[in-house]
Length: 79
Image (cartoon, rainbow, N blue to C red; front, side):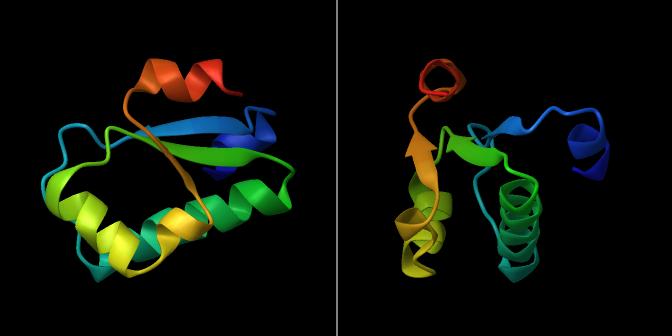
């Protein structure tokens, strides 16, 4: 994430389409990346969030502060 910020690539889509499970470490990494980008004036969006991953991110209320999109294309079009 730091390399992206330094290269002035501050609009990032995290493709979670193939991810079937996320634990507390994964949630922490997502939150850290989200915070770093936001402080740098950027934005992190999640694409393909579904199943258990969606349940966990919703349970932790990350859906209240981060935008979820069905596909990478939908996330990039909305930037």
